[in-house]
Amino acid sequence: MPKISEKGLRMPASPIRKLVPFAEQAKQEGKKIYHLNIGQPDIETPDTMLQAVRHFSPKVVEYSHSAGIESYRRRLTDYYRKYDIQLDYTEIMVTTGGSEAIEIAMMSALNEGDEVIIPEPFYANYNGFSTQASVKVVPIRSSIENGFALPPIQEFEKLITPRTKAIMICNPNNPTGYLYTKPELESLKELIAKYDLWLFSDEVYREFCYDGKSYFSVMNLSGIEQNVIMLDSISKRYSACGARIGALISRNKELMATALKFAQARLSPPTFGQVAAEAAIDTPDSYFDNVKSEYVSRRDLVVSALNKMEGVFCPKPSGAFYCIARLPIDNSDRFCQWLLEKFSYEQETVMLAPATGFYSDINSGTDEVRIAYVLNLDDLKKAMRCLEEALKVYPGKKVSPKAIGAIH
Image (tube, rainbow, N blue to C red; front, side, top):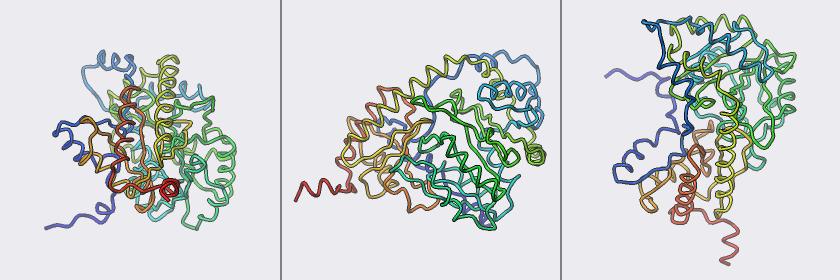
């Protein structure tokens, strides 16, 4: 029998989706599952997007330009201008989701064996993208104790080797919800300039910043314009995950010309997705105001409920719609599977993402889970009740030092 490739064997399974078979079995057993494991919002997609597809007039669904439909790229410059990001449309390449943007960016900028430093926990698929590109992720640990703030720059510098070619961030962050500040990014800029590194910045959650805090883009860091690659997606912005439209953005012309060669190899991004995405640019600000208000309510409910549970700690995120919670459990993979296989409360249970998949080392994050607060408030209340009841009876529950003291 032929053997599977070494790269295929190294390719990690998604920690967000690997528990799906257990969820399907639980549903067959009649359990209702609250899906907090995946960033699939229940917010309605703007009707302008749906109408644009319904009224698509061409009689042939043609390939677009490999860099994306020109009218859409031109309209995107208007969108980014709202965030004081000044671009020419040629500095934008439309991709098949943000995932392809990251894949092409890595393949365009990095050689096999090169190293990219990424604060962890990080978006789980960065592990997969780096495997595809044959580059090495070098993690730098951020701490739940300070809400997963950017690690000190001197800690980054300790990790730089001759193989280091890039630093990658996600801002606002998935999975932690942390929003990097302008001073933090300015300090990162000095390091990028000192070692002439690439700076990859995944900024798909820019619409979701809370508590009066401001989003600042790496595209506006002066002095490293040729080093910066911004990665984007409409999936979460417009609750249009299935449209599969993203963007790779850089002012570095050589990088963009190289990326286009990879884009040409896959021909073009989805036509209907681009048609919908172009129409979405006309989405009124009121849509985002309402969505942000809803997510703030959801965040506050979830974080408050978590921190009231015995032995649980969850810092309050300032962006995106995720949080990382530390639970009094022996192993998050085991716990999340147990929730689906063995537990139910009033015939209901909750599906979470084990945080182990958001670290480069599977032995990290074993007492943490990522929660996506993407359900309505009523469902979130029930989900938090399920989790609270589950922690009371989980066989692998850790007894907190406070509880031990009470026993003695």
